[in-house]
Amino acid sequence: MLFNIWWVCEELLKTYCEPGERLTWGMGKQMRSGDVLKLIWRDGVALPEMVFGLRFHAALTAILPVRSEVLMARGDCERPLVMADDLELAPALPLGDVLVEELPLDLPYGTMVVMLPDRQMPFSQVLGETVGEALLLAQSLSGIPMEHETDALYIMAHAAMRRAATLGLEGHEVEPQGFCRGLGRTLSRHWLAERRPLLPDPMLFQRSDFLWQRQLAVYLSELDPGFTSPDPLLVPEDLLRVADTPLRLADWAGRTETMLRAVMGAPEREDVPLKTSLAARFNLQ
Image: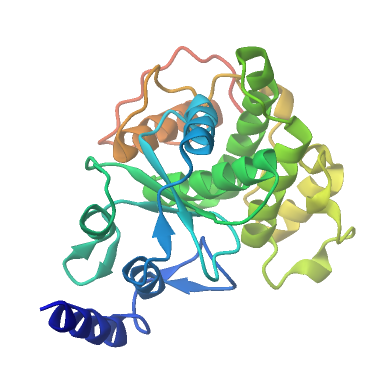
């Protein structure tokens, strides 16, 4: 019986590990959903050590109030992987269902799944990198107009950095500079890609103050003509605090989008009512 189950798993892996849906956030230069399936079925994903898991989850949800599950990934996992639980790893085979079958955990629908490299890495840096991946996931789930996407990510990054800087006052052992360097690792993968020669300082994203550098705004303006260089000082401190308790992933992404639209003055989506008291807006004319 066990042999038959293993044979079926191997056949599915052969079928789906190559084609699969590509994940633009995750391991290596490019990852496919089939690679995640292979990692799970070959015992490459496990629950974190309890103390670390609780500490990381608490810090993550203190910045982003979204329901999440933190796991550890072995093998070729070199950086955090952030996914929705309903991501199909194969036809009619969502990530959440696979994890519940393979691991001793309860995974409610609407959970953001975080897989961290199972290796020694600075806590604050991994947290910053994970938050960056989560912001990219939120952006992919939102309906922010394409011409405002760079502005939106830039604003969310500043809000996350400002929030991380206050965590120490709440008892979280998070080092802001390490957090920002981790955030920079994620954003450099997203914004640079093959365009590194356009960046005057190739080490920019490794600086803990990269978000405040004028050359970043200049580079993003060249990268995206729609980028308006929003003033970081006008980013509300509580921009990402859209709830007091963790929300389902879709609800969190929706509320975050609503806040961003209010701050940026972007056109309101018909299916997302805009309710906010924020007065500060960026000029996107």
